[in-house]
Image 1 (cartoon, one colour):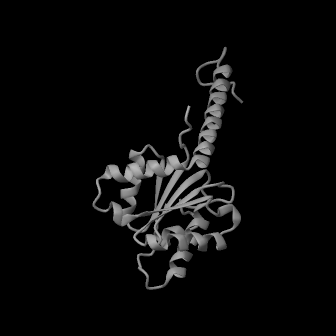
Image 2: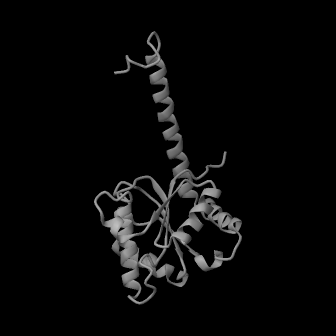
Image 3: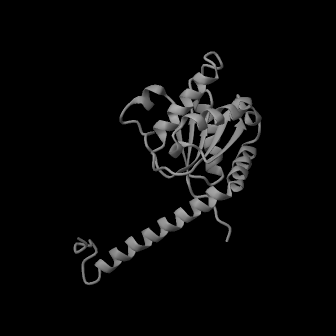
Length: 195
């Protein structure tokens, strides 16, 4: 049986419409995805829902998370992406693929080099790719979905890892189910003797 990608996917974008476009395509491709709308005020709060996530295996991020364009220069743009990844991923997250989902695809390799120099080893992407937003602005939704599926299918190392993680999770679920079932033998359906 061919392993299937089962990992968590996160989309980071400051533009709701653009973030929703790739999020919907990921859902249509069968990928479990969280859209992390980038709003500096929300992300900086201690109770931000986008802090220290684990098990993330695929991250799509816009290069320009502040919507400022190239005014501040590449280092300023890349610094925001770096900060977002540092907040988003826990040190124990493990390997992931980073995809620059951007109108500035010509700067995607520069972002990759920047992050590889500045992120701590545990938070560096294992693989890097890019997608041009402009290529999918007018394209039918199926084209973006197919491209996402192609990206995931080409990443065999991450796919094998997420397939294994899914198998382990399923096994743990089966064990928990068996424990509850065993505790109910001779007990009522409230599992009162599972203590």
